[in-house]
Image (cartoon, rainbow, N blue to C red; front, side):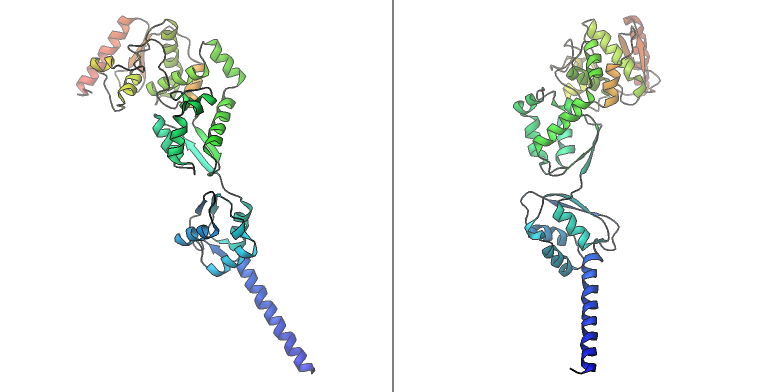
Length: 345
């Protein structure tokens, strides 16, 4: 073989090696996922999903720029045989290797679940069920199943007490039972020995604390600093075996939360949640109470107030009274202001 031929072969091999090296570098390292885009793409892979269904989802949303290179690397890394369910966040300008490695390893991204300001169980079901693979229907079925609720020491009316408003990291494909177990675990973390001792000291169970906290929060949602005083008033009434006479329970019984002025005929609504008729706490919370409301009950203000009504200045605070005569005077001023503003219902 002549020297020139050897040199030619060497140069050709060097060119081919460089070319293939560059090509493989491009396949592995060049941005190919959400290329030149501003937002991440959230890929949801259900249980038993196929490789083709993953590709269909990526293609439908135009996530991949170069299909050939992605498929090549996916096959090279055995992804078609190792599809793992979950929620995967694919950031802009991610390379094939970064994306496929994440999918193959099952390195999914948790849902950052935040829920607060929830009144009804159905609101809770919608807020949470739509965020996870188990969906609204399965979640609703679980929360309305007496056996499921009994597992956590609650019933279908009190089960919402278990959900403490906060932010939680939860995997999208977590099953309904595991999700409920997680919420129960967070609930037990809140109920430390110290808090359990406080509840026992004031004569309430943890569930009763949640129920009263829900009433306190509905009564005073805007002015958090007044919640311990409101809680103290309701505790005084409970201890005196007086009806709570909490207007928010009337709204809950009527399922009409837009009422601004409770009328006498509404106070006669037949419902276990009517605290004008029934003495003691209602059978369940009237909203998902937040932690500040729970703490307000556990650390309620000690005072002698038995009556309250909204202040006539409409500041959002309440006028408190020890005697019914003083309460009537406060109530007349408030009603006069409502009449002046022509707020009739």
